[in-house]
Image 1 (tube, rainbow, N blue to C red):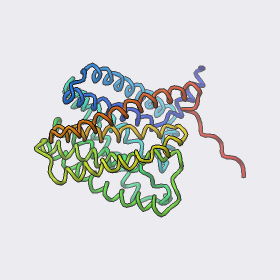
Image 2 (image 1 turned 180 degrees about the vertical axis):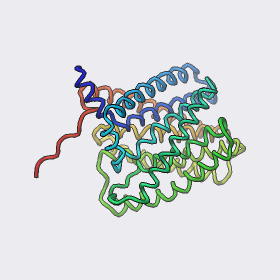
Image 3 (image 1 turned 90 degrees about the vertical axis):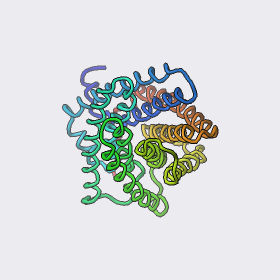
Image 4 (image 1 turned 30 degrees about the horizontal axis):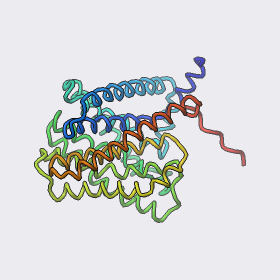
Length: 329
């Protein structure tokens, strides 16, 4: 590949590829929970932690080059009604990596969490301001990817209990919880009463699983894992119901042509699997270990499948390419 071709490919490197890092991070944390509660080898956790970190560093380097050399493309993504909401996948990836490194290199993990939290908060302020003062967006621009900044706010408390004051965790948790409820109403209105989303965006429906599932884990962490109360149960079972609802439509989803949007399946499945491990740890009911293991197995197979699909797409030059030109009227 010539330097010109490489430079062109970097210009079209998509921000939503960080969704793959989120999915791999979720699987890594799931393998850690499986080690602690089911006794599987810790080698799986360390191996995937290395792979996930390496991928994050590679993606971050490429996107930094894009930011420096092709800032007009970054600005275009930042002004796009869908792609804008994928920028927090970078900060969420940092926050999740801090949880992975918490027991490996605490000081490094604390720095990662601090940087991730600052970026996440900055993006949250910008995106919410954008929602309030927009001039051109329509209800049909709304899709579940808009939940990503809110999910990031709910992820912050997972590290706050280890790296900062718990009150900071409650601050972010409160923001995420309220805006999850608000966005849920808007998304359901958009899905029920307006034309269907583009087929390629339908995998983002799985993002609906993430806010209650991550919210459950964050709430339990903020409470010091002091038992599953009524509110925790509500959060967990909403997440579990959304998982069952979407898995019941699997035949519909597998007919959707492959795109990077498929990576939207991964982190939400990781979140509900982790939530199920917490339920098993807290209640001791074997059913939750079966649920967690089943979802973790699905997630592992899915990530392997998506990795192969993505590599094939890269080989066939279907990723990091300019969008097809619109036909003339």
